[in-house]
Image 1: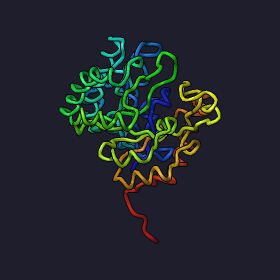
Image 2 (image 1 turned 180 degrees about the vertical axis):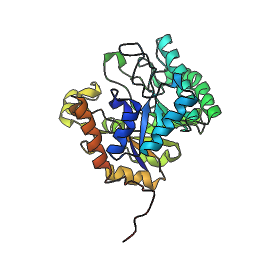
Image 3 (image 1 turned 45 degrees about the horizontal axis):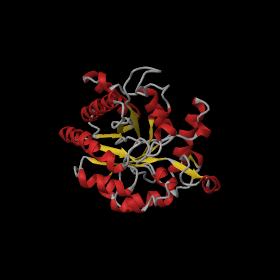
Length: 314
């Protein structure tokens, strides 16, 4: 396995600073944020450490040079929108850019992009399903043409009243994944598996690794802590943010030794990327760098670096 981090946590950094940070904090790889580069305050904007709209031969060479210089790989290109948004313009921007990110992953020789399925939160799973198939059937065909795998993260994206009750991402539970992979059976579609989202849903985060082993394309390392007193006080219909908080690996309820051991048992040998969303480490840029340093130090207990040469005794 390779240890990495999601670059969206340091939007202030340019791409070389991202690679330098990874090297300094003992990461093997990075999942690079690739939102549309529309600038601050623009609709649908976000972090773009690689601007896929400007990718040409020279840009590709510059990126590969940075990878070689810092000995850090790119695990995937990342873009997490809502391609099933009820806003037609937003949905079109999302699907068009997903295609651009897929094409960029192929051009860079990465072969992996991560995203969300999306959802209309006001509709049930069954009501969302026909539109999901209409949207994602062509997207997965596009990914197949470019020989790129698409990893769907399982975050429900449920943070406020506008996203109630379903959240902005459909593929959040084993029951839904099972149906998804039956109806979209392409080997290009899989999971960017994040155990933290299963913890607060009270779903076993270890058992699904066995059933969906062949669909594990990428893994996120994020923890969560459930406030059981708050949950018992507010109940399961409360907004999830009322009874859980995202934490750095090792500071929540995920048993990382058991989790990494199970990944190994089911044959997963891919990237495990830290996703920093811990409010205790968001006060400043220094705090976010500290979060990356602390997460690497902790997870290296379970994911050792694979060195290119074997040390010999002198």
